Image 1 (cartoon, rainbow, N blue to C red):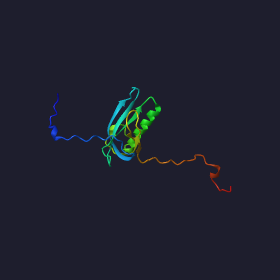
Image 2 (cartoon, helix red, strand yellow):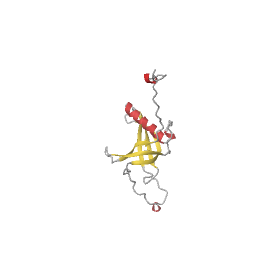
Image 3 (cartoon, rainbow, N blue to C red):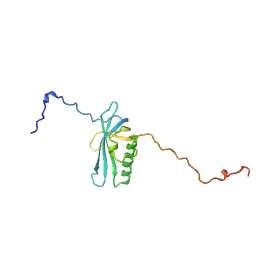
Image 4 (cartoon, helix red, strand yellow):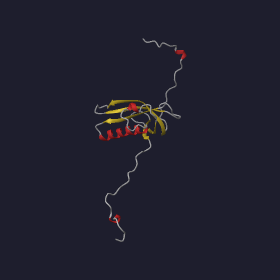
Length: 156
C-alpha cells in the first residue's frame, strides 16, 4: 500500500474538468506535445499532436489532431503532409522537418466543432491553419511574338 505523504484535509479537490467543445472560431494555439504513432492496422504512421489555446476566454483548453505521414492511401498521406506543412507555415517555420521545431510556437488557427460520433460527444478540431501567403503570381510571358507585335512601323 502506498501512502500519500501529505495531509489530505489541507487540499481541496479540483473542479470537474469541462470537456464541452469551445465555440468555432479563430484562436491562438501552440502545440504542447507531438508523438509519432503506428496506425491501428500497422500499415502506416501518423503524428498525434496536443494543441493548447494560449489566449482569450478559452486559454488552457486542449485540442488534439492526427496527421497521416505514411499511409497506404495516397490521398490520406497527401492531406496529412499538407496539414503538417500548413501547421509549420502558420508557426513561421515553413522549412521545419521535425515537430520539435514547432512545439511551443504560437500560431493562428480556425477551430471547428465536430459532430458527435462513435459514442463520443462533439469535439473540436483544427479546420485550417491560418497564415499569410507569400506566394507571388508569376507574370505570364508569351515567348512567341504575335504578328501584331512585329517590329517596325504599324503601316508597313
